[in-house]
Image (cartoon, rainbow over all chains, first blue to last red; front, side, top):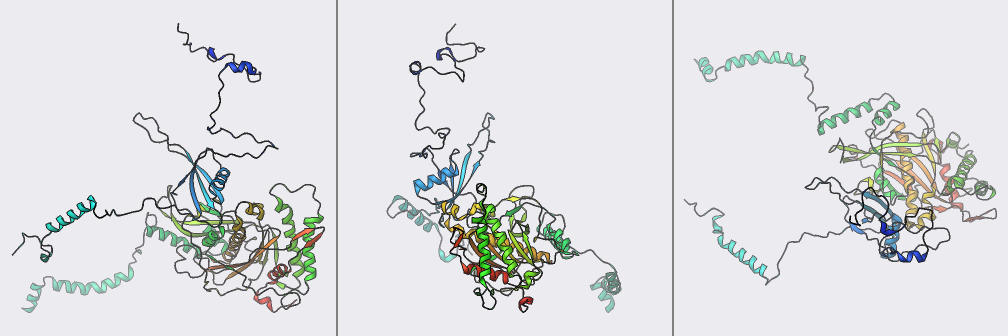
Length: 196
Length: 425
């Protein structure tokens, strides 16, 4: 029998890892630990929880945060001082206030957040449900009477080609053709085949 | 021959002519006896005409109500989701929103003349007893009373400022009653509820079984002023009923939900502090104590220094509108039967140290879309900035006492209806 295959009814960790310890038992000393590979978390990974604060600890300061936020256009009309963001689910309103004030020097008066449920209704060709991700939306009200209006990113602009380019010559040619095809203007739009 | 030609050219003409002759007197007789039902819109159809007919029927029922109680019941019977407006709010720019909800124009500065000093006509005879009474109230709460424990977190106002304000109002009212006969007949309430329910604006319902239909926006204020004085006769108006205010009422481009304001469905109540049968059914002055949530220090810490005055104004506009509106509805006025005389009340908003004074005149209750179409009247609120009553209290002494504020407070309490002006007790 192959040594790597274990019967399904065998419980416990695979044999290579070593002895299973209970919750209260002391672990092996540093010498014993040196033999096994150490799991070091990646420094850029967002911690699942901040380090616990106890009275007397220094103020927690984070210099390069892993939070990234998006400024979005509001779906419904908002007051002039309200800016809408999509923020990571783990970020709180206090985090967002400190983020905007420290990094971008934006004075923030109030923040309100909500979690938008992503739809789980769509199904693919195998009838398996497709989940759109949930996201957190924050409404930030600016302080000191400042206002913000989301800019129009795609304004309506008629394409006017510059003089001398191929598009311009082409447009000019088409205009001339159309002029040639038109009938005598003195007939007032009446076709040629009509005549008394 | 002529007769036959006439008959041939117009066959049946004679028959018609004679038939018409017979028919007209018969028709007149028949028309006077027959009554056809009037051609009106349906009552249950999903159409604008049907909705208008239902609304008109409801309005007619309110007009025909035999008593004010029945009228209020007809108007507030139907419960639907409504916005709950809190007068004491920490929301930003709440005073502008509340102005648009209540059609109120805000003017800074009071419509009264500058408060007369002691000894002048209309002023208090002597300021010293009043000042000493106020200082006693202050020292009692801030210095003399030795409390076993500090007030719980964020409950300082109700532990310290609330008993001070109550004592202040009671003592000042008592000291000024000999000089103001209307105060002698007044009723002083402590933390009585004041409720008001009204409609303003319309929207298309976005979701639900009534989707796509036009629906009025409903608002409710449930307020508990710290103290209020009610009198049996209405205070005299500050400006005429149809006074055109030069200031514009702010208009918001978005739904009230963005304030933020939330909807709830519960009893629609209209209440001035007592029931309908009470003779003291007109308002004189309300006193409000701002909660800890909108304390000055907290707002300064949160980058909201410009919202300090907003809190005072929003509280005054909402509370005084609710009180005067409820007073008007107690007299039988409502949005389709607009007020024929202005309802006037005064208000003092404080946080224990800073006082702001407000006067409110209700000129119109017609705030629904239907009633507001040709309504040039606006409600008016006059107000002052908040000023401190004292600088600091230390060593059993009140330092920097502001006499002008006390004179303004005395002027408010001495305000009386027209009939009492000539009377002097």
